[in-house]
Image 1 (cartoon, rainbow, N blue to C red):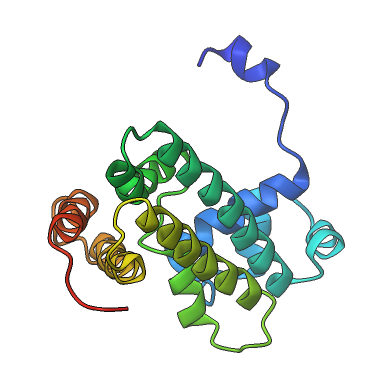
Image 2 (tube, helix red, strand yellow):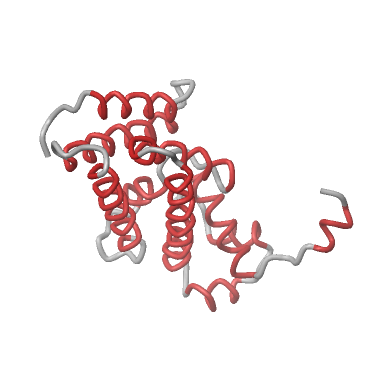
Length: 198
């Protein structure tokens, strides 16, 4: 991007800068270790701006996670729509993660599970977003599994979800060269050779 192009692009709003900063810092360093001051400095906004938009750190956490969920849902749907066969549509989950990580903040694994671990309080405003992400995963995987098998789609969806969770943990561990590719291959084996019951 040349200087003229960069100058022609509008600067993100203060709200978007706060969400960008929160997404990056919370994903990289964790929520508890990231102070409000760090977010403000990273976003180049005044404290009053944060409190005007989000009422505090808890509100910012929930809003950043909600934006991530909306983006994730869209990226995943794009991957499903681009896939040619029912099996490929089910496996598109793994491709979608790679696309999301290229397009947005990579993170260390699953931001929703990480947030749930850091913030176990069921009354925290982010809890509803975490539950919505789990519901999206289960509903969409069940729907896609129904187009792949008539045997036990719920069992297939559950097994693919388990492999997906393992692949996301693999990203955080950083020990496997390609946890998403490996997870996709394992999930493909589960389509060919179903195991377990729902």
